[in-house]
Image (cartoon, rainbow, N blue to C red):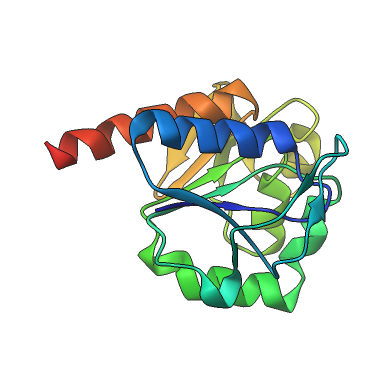
Length: 166
């Protein structure tokens, strides 16, 4: 299952792109969050997560859409506990436009990443290397510049998942 993590002020377009990529690839998918309460996205849409952390099914991959103030979730004990619980079982973790800041704060961001122009300066200041590419994979983490680059990374990963099924 592909899980899409929703946090307050998440980028709805990235969550929708992830859901659509998974649908197109024939993969099971669901949104998840700290709780089942509706969350307001950055553009003003209200989404209700399919699962709260404790009730979620096993995940094969996780998408972290960007969000306003996303780095603060890397300090939240509930989000940190969730990452700790699922991290080793995840085959892939996909980062939206600025979700790098969340993983950096949580201590799980690889040293080399692809990142949008607005996200690169704080990452460089923290000692990360930003590669000139739409997306970049280091281990299980697929960093992207967000938007359609997130979709492209998901699609690339998903093609390999489909080949495994055949």
